[in-house]
Image (cartoon, rainbow, N blue to C red; front, side, top):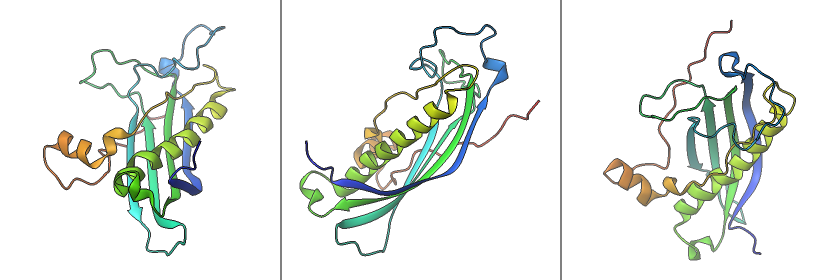
Length: 180
């Protein structure tokens, strides 16, 4: 085991909204709920941004990351097998990370931050969602394990068809359903 070249210095939740979606809540109580399957086939929207910080840090290069996650159960016309979650999520996290000096030996520094930074934040979001849903009607929901390799510069360029694309996923629409 080795210390990661990217260290999480500070993480804070800016917004946490976890609500029951009555329209997609199972009508019968579930005695055996698979917390790993509640989000299978569900469209989870995310947006990640990163900004180098001008601050000096003896450990390396500091960055500020934001991560927004929205699960709004809006139908996705592109998905033929879309499922819906019993929960609606709207979460935003800010974090400061430091890319340690010498990390460039392991790979492109921007790619190291773009891929590993969101992974550090995702773990905190996943834990928070599990804790908050533990006493909700559909039971504990565990977000799936994911990777962020699609945020590498080369992957973004290939997906967009041109170079110079920042490491940010497409913006999500933040519409909310009216409460009944």
